[in-house]
Amino acid sequence: MVVTASKFNMFSFFKLPAAWWCGVRLRTLDKNMAVVTVRHKWINQNPFNSMFWAVQGMAAELSTGALMIDQIEATGKKISMLVANNKANFSKKATGKITFTCEDGHSIKEALDKTIATGEGQTIWMKSVGVNEDGVVVSTFHFEWTVRLKK
Image 1 (tube, helix red, strand yellow):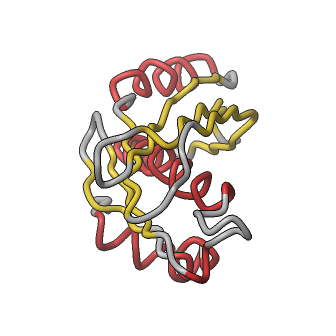
Image 2: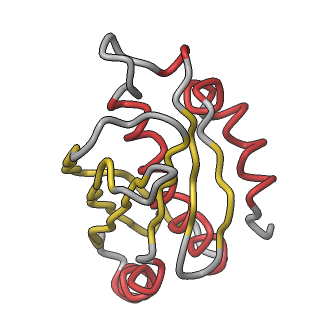
């Protein structure tokens, strides 16, 4: 199955309903980059009238995870994936439309090739940067993904 933004958004409605209801949407996906947007609104706000940090985390994780899913699908193998660790930095109040971009798709193939060849789990750190409509960075997330060939 080819992974597309529209198919992935339908998937999120059924499998990631919290992200879907908060407005997290995959906009573009290719082998090297994924772009996810979310707009600040009543359902995803915090008491300080900005976007709740966890909503930003869902959008950022989706930008990295969509790349992983796409490349795992391309291998034709059964490979599990899991976030083992994450780090986040919040540099500006998140209001309006926030766009999270991950450009680390190029580094996934090596980890997948190693886990397929050795059968051992591999880890990979991926970064997603969230910017507001003015192009100002509001948050930066780093996710450590683990991949392992299913037995």
